[in-house]
Image (cartoon, rainbow, N blue to C red; front, side, top):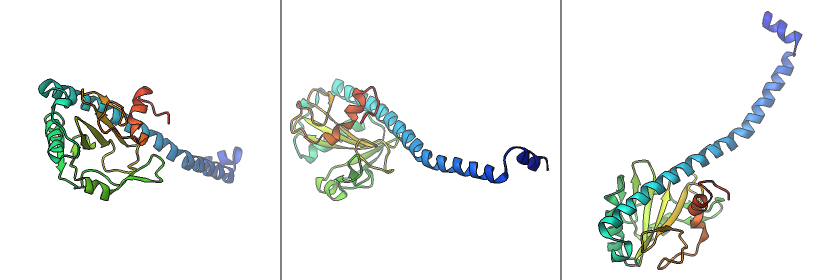
Length: 212
C-alpha cells in the first residue's frame, strides 16, 4: 500500500511505465553501439599483443638464422612456405596447424571493412595451397611467401565473426631485412598494391587507435 501511495503522490503508474519504456528503447539503441566499441577495443588490444609476440619471434629468428633475405625464400614455393612455418613454430605457441588448403584453422570468406565485398574466398585460399595455424591465444594466421620476404595474414578474433579487414582481420609483411612493414611497402619483392591490407599499420601509427 505504501508503494501505491508513493506512486499516487508522485507519478502515476502509467507515467512510470512510459518512462521505463523510454529507457528500454534508449538502451536498445545504445547497447549495440557500446558492444561494437568494446569489440573494437578488444580487437585492437589483441592486435597490439600479436604485434609484440610476432616481432619478438622474428627478432629471435633473425638472431638464430639471419635475415629473411638469406633464408633462400622463393615466390610461390611450397618448400619456402613450409620453411617459414617451421621457423615460426619454434617461436610462436601454435596449438594447431592446418595442411595445405585446409580451411578449418582460418575463417573464410574475409570481407572488406564495410562487409560489402569478399576479399579472400575459401576457394581462393584452397587454390593457393597454403598452411594456416592457430595460436594459444586464439589468433589464426597464414603466411604468403615471396622472393626473400613474406606476408602475414591474421585474424585476432579467431574464427568468430565478422571476419572483416580492418576490424578483426589484418595483414603486414616482413621484408628481407626482417622488418615488419606495410603489405604494400616498396622494400618488398612482389609487394602487393591493395591498401585494404594496411589497416594494422594505420592503427599502429595512430598510437594503437582506430581512426578510419
